[in-house]
Image (tube, rainbow over all chains, first blue to last red; front, side):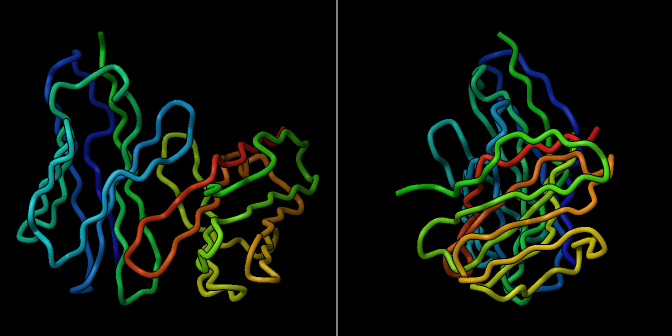
Length: 115
Length: 113
């Protein structure tokens, strides 16, 4: 069965610090997709990134970077030089190809960036 | 391009009353999802549609919840009767072909008193 674990319930950092949010997943499928979503205080879930299981290349987008390691079933998310606007709940999600488009979300990590 | 539209944004009802939520997905997105998000938790799937067919409703509490997507476009989720434990945010999402991410609506925050 597919499962996503985000062990960090809450993280607090001071502005300009780097922070890494952990995501560990379980799947029986060889083809799958991993996602990160951001849920700011306004409540709407915002798509950040998608990664398929065949592409382990790390990705950087501005202050955001993602590290995908199939060997450890992890898909970690790093924010460099954090800002107050980064304060939100971040969700990691998994979609298995063999099970249609069923998305399973982790419990989320609440990030608070203090000024 | 319009996003996923949900209404109402907020709803407060007394227990045992019925309630309905409406969702209009992004045009061309054949897959539509209803998720429930309890406070402090991640979204949990209630039902997934491929066009007008419910392809995964295993997590939908069928004794009180029902959903429809008659023309394969917009969808309605209904609860009858509502219970106190149904208080949550109900999220609608849609997606294009497989492998793409979900686009979520703003959600409906339901409070049952």
